[in-house]
Image 1: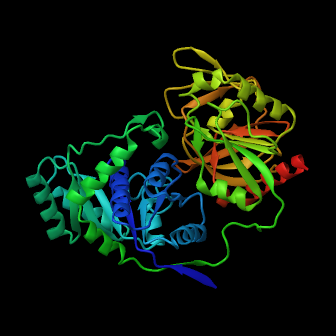
Image 2 (image 1 turned 45 degrees about the vertical axis):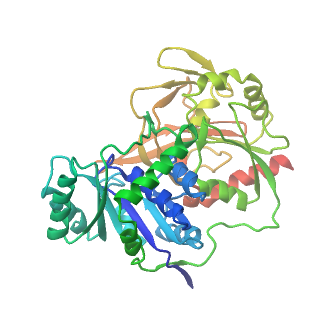
Image 3 (image 1 turned 45 degrees about the horizontal axis):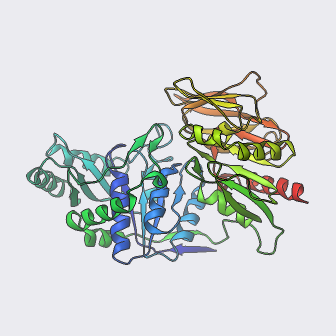
Length: 463
């Protein structure tokens, strides 16, 4: 037995990264919300930052749909579940249309998810120094794997005449409608740093940017034409069973979750699954709060930018001491990426300044000039931890420029990446008492047992 979803949908993609996907996606979300539509946002890939912008605009959680981390049925379920009450779904793609896991054009890519969800693809592309060649590019992207490229938006044409030339070439020689353009000087700017865009919570003039984006869409984009394309999407079929196991009357446990500008990289699904399994989540700020929430039987320290806020984190001595005391007392703690950094002795900035962190682990976190172990990976547990038993496996993703200098090699996790047809192994992660930390980010829907295990340890600790 299956369920279905007929929500109108648009997939926003591009020939390559940096073409304007996030700008167009945010603008469309803002414009359609302004029109009074209930719009459900999604993000292809393992990104945290773009979904936060989506949620700020729509007031709805933006859901990650990752073609490598998740099975196809799970992607359909997530899409259908969150789109059930929406009037429109806008899905922001990742990188270029066919870029995903390795060289395969449909694994982990926007194109793969577009096919899976029968979603019309809108390409946003720069046509700088191009005229009719833009049509050849669209033709190639559409026909390479027969993806439903249904429309094009031109980003920053050099002039209105340039836009008309490109539009005529694409429509006349490819048969794909061009639905407008984003002007070269749109009056908006989203700032970036070493791991991508500056977070929505740090963008002071975000409401003005959102309003300006909505204005640009109304002025320069054929919104009615996009809605017509969205309504041409087919039906998504998926299994009917609930994607989150758990019962409302099950035993509950309190879990403290770090959440502020330094720690905000959480998949919505990870938090929801913990809730469905009995976790009462209590949020706190390692930047500002003097103590962790009382009566908590577990702590979840997610990723983020502890390196950016190292001075403030170091200055909050009482909170650091509380976490250290809880860790020494045997409270189950899961620390991921930035949270893992925070549990170490200190952080050394590029200028050599050293900031004290929690100090439960004796390592030193340092920032490097390049990404460390970037990309998708398969992880295997080589020790028992609060999340998994030795031998358990889950797919994961890494994206960080920091590393932990440590004296021991008592690792918890083996990672496996495929590069040029070869499996590259490395080791990471650390455990002590009931604390486990590692750099790879995991998505609980990939292996629900990891969430079950953590909840189980919290229940045991809390009695």
